[in-house]
Length: 233
Image (cartoon, rainbow, N blue to C red; front, side):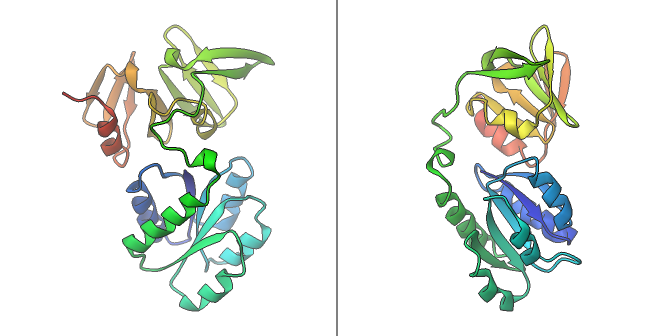
């Protein structure tokens, strides 16, 4: 399940991002300090869940909801308890969190959102729900790739680079879209700009991974989960 955080307070964004990173199978794919930037992102990407502050300058959380065309679920965050009543007017609001956010209430809100997902989104991560093969569009040609051949995928602005042993493909898409086509057991996003094939790791040192000749950074928040996935002796 992926999510974004929309809050004009930097401390609140950091706290919510930290709490999200503690939840298994919950990935923050964007954090925004205003509603307009979030809108621009949602015009290109589909997310399962939005953590949304109510009181933001210029464009409130409720203004955001009223103009939102996405089917994403919403968890409201605010220090204003009086806003809770208005929250019940919207079907896509699944929970309401009062700041400072209690970690246990946060967990319960995320669990509720996860239960509301379509069944196909709510499969156990141990059960593969994608094929080992997928197609990419290169110059109006469809090229079939086997995921086992992919070493890593790197985000580069509005396109990605898919690295194989002897070649690489440049595709105009996003990391989150290509991630949905990859087997969950074999691939892991170690950084906001990199997804790696776990079987292609040569070496891990400190907060970097070596695959082929590439040294890839590991986000501090993602390192613990990476360690769990590796077959350590």
